[in-house]
Amino acid sequence: MKEEKVLDVLMYIFENYMDDSHEFSPDQDALILELSQAGFPKGEINKAFNWLEELSSLRDDKPVGVVASSRSSSIRFFSGYESAKVSMSCRGQLLRLEQSGVLDSVAREIVIDRLTALEAEEIDIEQLKWVVLMVLFNQPGQEQAYDLLEDWVVSENRDFLF
Image (cartoon, rainbow, N blue to C red; front, side):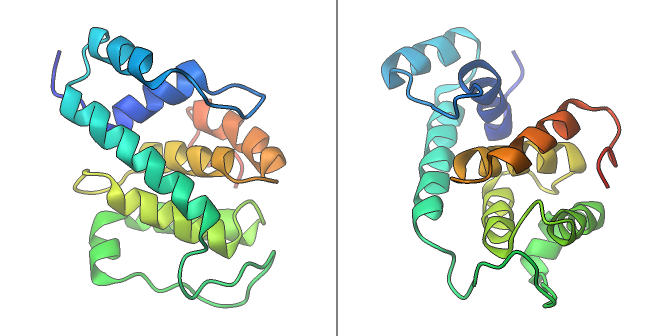
């Protein structure tokens, strides 16, 4: 099997272990064994678990300098590193998600943090879809936005909602 990326491991976990109850609590040792048997390298499995742990900690701690609001008239400027990593089309899609009320400013910052934590050289729309879905899944009170975006993720149409 070709070398897998962290997002591939995360997608496997998400597709096989996340359900409508928004609960995720499989036995970690059994999950590591299953992921290994599925062909994922141990290093990528460990990185995926670290990524999920950091996502969980971000849920509990607001990103620095971010105030939650349903609508904001502020503009989010991306750093040089973020701009190099998150493609222009992804930045545009993030803006549309925020303007439509699917993401608030806190969720947007968590998405950006989790995107930049991926090892991909440049993030594309498909990667953005999965990260947004995982972030919303992990955020209490975001079940409606999650359900809406679940259709977007499985859709071949990049502008499914917006």
